[in-house]
Amino acid sequence: MATKKILLVDDDMDIIESMKAILASEGHIVFTAGNEKDCMDEFNKEKPDVVFLDLMMEKMDSGIRLCREIRSKDKNVKIYLLSAVGDETAGTLDIHEIGFNGAMSKPVNAEELTELVK
Image (cartoon, rainbow, N blue to C red):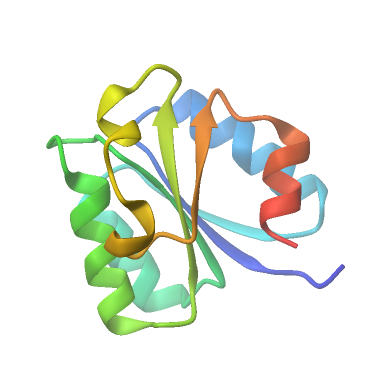
């Protein structure tokens, strides 16, 4: 499997650390951000292949805004929405129309996570 550069964006450091450990063990290079500004700084600096965005951080629609901003800069990057199990907001979104490639529930499943980045 090819090594990928992956950006994880979530304000929950426990989620970030568990995802980072899984992805790093698969040989990927992982960058992290805990807010919108850090996300865009890391995205512009590192040019990741895959981005995982938390739906709600500082503001209710942080993940949506970030997805649109990233998508405007790079049409080919894979962007996945992260949402808490039972998050009703995520269920009402047309994630593909927004620009996401897919979605993943938190807490993350290691097998599902590694499959998404292949």
